Picture 1: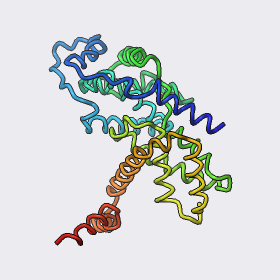
Picture 2 (picture 1 turned 180 degrees about the horizontal axis):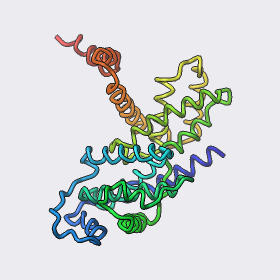
Picture 3 (picture 1 turned 30 degrees about the vertical axis):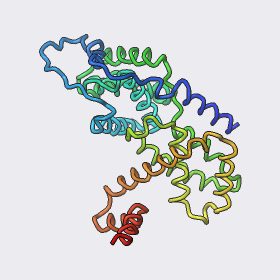
Picture 4 (picture 1 turned 135 degrees about the horizontal axis):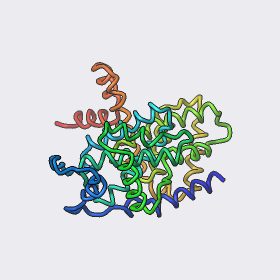
Length: 300
């Protein structure tokens, strides 16, 4: 049953939710949707807005992700809802060549969050409440109009499999002898790292299954001691994945690249809470530093 669920989600992300299906080259009129949605109010006296690329403008997208997480935490909702919201956000703007103005980016982030909450939460947030989060910049009607624009553009495909969906099932495939405590610990550590990946545009075009597996493999290698999960259990787990899922073997290079990126994301996050001495100590033990020092020793 678990294998069937994983294969079904893999089929889903590789077909109807494949990111490349949505990408359209940028055009000079890519931001025109902003006018179609927000011109219901008189904007003739407002200055012209700067057109940005939400994929390349890392500050803009990162702020949107962080803001979305803060809203979810404030209302006590699932952080998985953020992954759904940002997935819809990314696929929608891919159809616009990633180009828009800052007003449209904000309105779209409000709207995709509204859609994700309706899809993923039992607790509902009033549309008027979300509208107030824009500090009177947008009304409930603006969000409703944008919702229809996004749903039509994405052909109502707004139930993407997330990395957490894959992780929960992949962890189920660990050896039966693995304790529930260890399984829970692996999932929580993996979930935390996958949340960091949501904010990084590097992972936009990577399958969520690839991110999930990369995250789990990092946790098993870096976080779980052998008295919690034996070497034999780990080896059997990897052999089982290799034999069961052909995509694991076919995507091994992408998985390894994601593993490296995820490690750096986690290091960067940890560094923000370290003093200078701790940072130097950690870097001295990192694989990259070891390689650099080895090369330096070989130089004349």
